[in-house]
Length: 637
Image (tube, rainbow, N blue to C red):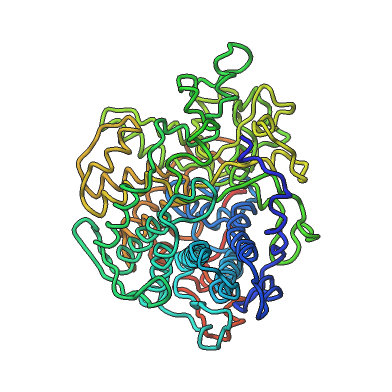
């Protein structure tokens, strides 16, 4: 485990650039303060810039998930999760009901993503301040490719969240550049050009769990970005039989021309043939609840035993070579380490635009953790072993459990991924009780990213990580909030296989994923692919944008996404700690179908940024603040 549990010293060089994001689209001051005609002056300077570029993802993954984490947001906005939590947890409920509490609720991620884009622009523009030798050209191209890759990724997330926005491709921002542009016609061509540059510049070898991007990650994200563009904007309802071409931008590493489905497929075939990736033998190996320390407790016959992993091979446990963090199917991910603290570089918690506290901890584990309060003391191992306490926000919906169970019943099989992804609270945790202010609870918990403890832990809420070789405590001095080091997967090999089936209609790729799950192999149909993607990637941030691309822009209230979201209505929920047939899930202002149709799944752009840009950026449809259907309303009291 030493390769995953690192000292804070290892990240100080990157952390020096992490103070606060600027509140406009102007160039990021953290970078420009360092920039001159002579900086960067050596390869190590560029490497530090790249580290700072990646660290934006740590900020998103390590901050409060209802404020910072778009991958958490997309799960909450989908039919996989409810808002849930306690009465006071209103941000997450706003997301689930597709409304807003205030006109700047979704500003933090907007600012963070533009900050990341600014860092990438600076590196792209200044990389040749270094006097690269002929023998350093490969290193130079790799670093430049990583900068293009991250600019593309941050821009992709930005436009998927907010739609038409300003496209910033230079550190010198003119008034014209501050004008919002068409995502379909301008932004996606640039995203796919950047990813093409990245693919062609980076080395044709795996990053091997280093946390850096490589050629294969670029090829995989070309597929994801193109498929969203083709499905959502061009309304190609079934990609196996449809196609669309997009014009690329000429720049270093990209000769322009067009990108069509055949090109996307060729990139995925390269990953399959030359990437050296493979699915972990056991789906549970991907998740920290399968760690060998917990497995050992299941075998020893003393104390508690987590029966769900008892039948695993020990070599397949999360912390064994090729499993868990750095596993054989991990293509790109956010990595975390024990470098969190309440203030980094003197910044106090919650100061400025955002707090850097916990940024190296995978805080989504805390948000999805089981609620624990003074009333029911769910943090005690006797109640929740082996799962740790947390904020209980974004709990799984009844829909994901019910739809999955229906699929198992119809197909007469048991899908190993269901209980590998969800906690059935009332059956798996016999002593579990609800908190008195719980609302929108379903009776299920997220197992994939759930933190776990051990009988061997000193305190009830200590994480199993504290018993790993090489562990040293972070300066948070709060293991329940600081000790979350599980990688957050942004691209897995399973996704490459399922994208290949969806693009080609060849079921053999999907069948590999099905075999690993122990479910019957099926022929290609779009419906089969849709189900497999939902089951395989639940709680990994993909479902909402999959729903959107299968619906097409302006799909109305009868499109795939709108109908799936509306199917949540009427499901029995726990409210104020009680489960009653009389309390069912209802939309807080109108209906999920209506809110999705009105917004196309985009969030409101922050009004402060619209004001800063003096009308060059306009609000998205469906977000008129004067319309009560767009505004948060208290429905649990």
